[in-house]
Image 1 (cartoon, one colour):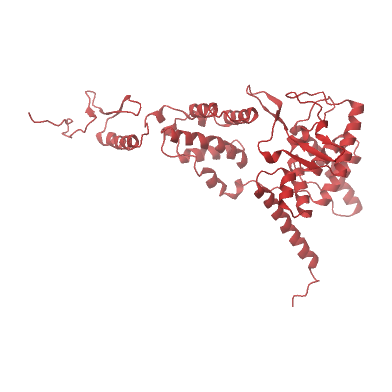
Image 2 (cartoon, rainbow, N blue to C red):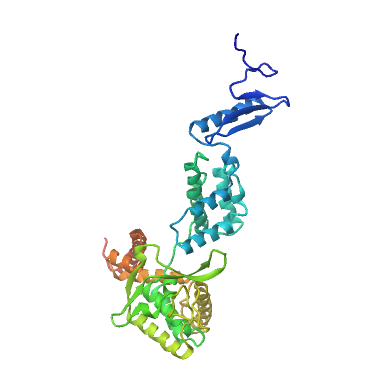
Length: 410
């Protein structure tokens, strides 16, 4: 008996796996990589075959085409973060906090099959334009999303990573580029310290600001210092942990101790005379007001303490700097006007600029990049080199300005 090929009512020959149903729809059935029988439907044979062609293409590469229609970005993230066994608790909590805040309730609900390059780009621009996020923060979101889509590729759920190249495209627009860090000038640095030291209102902040300016420590390293970390006999500071103020696993913002992420973060820093004096000043103050009572992850005896005997938060230091700058600029503007001179004003800056300022002063006086890298705790020498390059460029310009009129060219 001759084999008779199946046809639809219009006389179109149906291929293997295709079927014309009584309800007027076409269907195509196949077995996925897990041995499960799956079916797709369409009212149009050509539309069905277009999907069928993509399915066969995916199946030949071992990709499960329908799984991406079921799995959401959130489900993928939850699986990914659960498998990151090597993360420090604070790092894990930071990742979860960032994801839950910016991704989970919107973009995270999308099915994998729905997410394309343009969708990711729209999402990032939405974060920048509507949520007011800076490009650096969106970069942090990218650092979370990119690896989970890579995991989806390895799990054969999707073929390409939709986040690939998105941030590079966004950063082509210079308006989203992070502003270049600018160190305080020497006159600004001196003006800041002199004002704080002599101020009845802000003199209590003199020790911590001096230490930040005189060591280049990260704010988390500085606030985490204990008296045991200071060696007054040999004049050095031991940096071996960070005091972090971030959300924990329950989403509550708390203090915690974190060891440096890289070996470069564990180091000793020479204690300059001004820094030593600032530490001793803080010690004398606390002999009268009381020493820090905070205990964080079994760490105690912290150097810097609030009036209530608690460790500081980075935000409290930044807020103090903001108030100090506003008060100083107001007084300096009035004084300069009275003395008929240009005022030396302080820019709007955070405590991280104090670290950058120290590094700049170091680069201006030291040529050994490895020494600078060691003191700063830079894990990547390129970070040190970039700051050094900026300093030398400014010094070149200053030298040329000083040579003006003194060098005969023609």
